[in-house]
Figure 1 (cartoon, chains in turn brown, blue):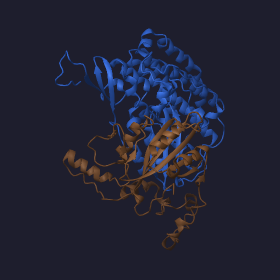
Figure 2 (spheres, one colour):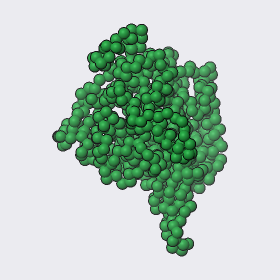
Figure 3 (cartoon, helix red, strand yellow):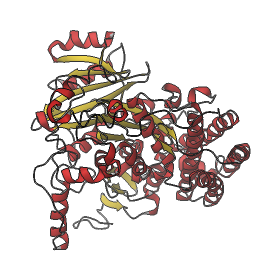
Figure 4 (cartoon, chains in turn cyan, red):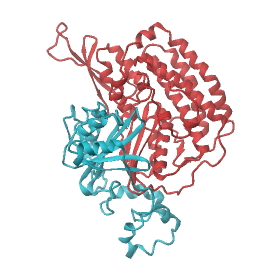
Length: 242
Length: 373
């Protein structure tokens, strides 16, 4: 994986310092300058500058958020707005109930599930499940996020919106998230006998490729592969919602 | 075709038929397993994934700019829309706005592409239902648009038309005239298709009352685009959440009533006329100015996530991008309209004849490249 990243970045190599969290504009403008700081100042640099840079999460509240707070008290974690897009973070335990409430409430009836997907955060061994909801009546789009540990199951919302059936199957297919009470939880895009979950960050594409060639063609592909390397293992994951 | 062993001709009340993946009317490699009672469909199951290329994984392995041409290969019938949605999503994350001139070119190209997509849909849908002539007319007009694309960017299908921050190419000499001539004639051509189909008894017989879905069900199933509007929901992202320069133009959102195949057909035909209307407005007032917004050459969005969606010819095409501040997306999720729309096939075909399955697959206007990604 690490090797792959290097390959794909090669065309832009001159402008790419090995620091992952460097602020974009600044680093570009002063290309000759940065080389001296890295040896000593590397750990301090990412901590200080990002704060004033770029768009920030802004506190956001609405009657709907208040209603969730009131109804589900302890389940509610926070609500914020990022780049004008409103988001609610909740705990995972009563997700189906919360979703039913969001769909049926009178304040902003979020009657349409646009998308359900997941993001893998291996550093904390978590999946972030993202629900994008839309209200036809109020023309409002809201993102609901919840986090589960990699080994934890989560309640399916396919009983709330039929759309979730396939969307959840895809999340299961690509991430291995186990949904409870899902009518038909099986792989959807990949073949039934596929090993592993490709969109996980620790999924080893090369190893998979080597094994596939060995199994189906009976030869060694000669590809180099590494075991257990995720993309930012050393650089550290940065979590948007943290 | 496979039947259960113990069934004989006389007690064969239920049989299972596998339709596809190599079947001309499935528009690609879609396999539908049908459970039949005689000729009536009891249940259907879609088997997809034959074209899976791991587009979302590629999005994590390529830089933001490199990923754009890959997206053209999803919905290859409407590659311009794919490109527009992604470029706008990244621009939103970067807090960059494409200059007005680029926005107008984007609108013209996207709407031309919508017409090609609908023309291809109409031609193949009509062939599926036995009307071969329409196909020839549709491809005649589609060719005109593809020529414009070819003149503009050198490609006809996988166009890679736009860049993050604007467009790369200036419009060529005579572009406006060529587009003007096309949109002036085009509504008449749509009337021509209508004379072949709209009041055709066979066409009506094959499409009226077939694949009916109510507005409530359609929303529950996440249907978008013409498939949703056929059920009477006047909802179009171009109006609801305007992007590019769509708020500058006047156009209507056609909607059906019955939610059957015929209404969806009427909606798409009217949409083609409306697209021509948008283009004719846009082409007259393309503003002067730069084509690209001022932005750094290395695209490094700030840490965060964004969801942006556009009205592709098939429905809501959304991109959910999570950025970790590097040059590659941490997660590049595509919300494909065809994928979600296809899910409703199961509900639509129940109780219909086998021949209607072909009509319903056609009316959903799916592209397998986008479903499987």
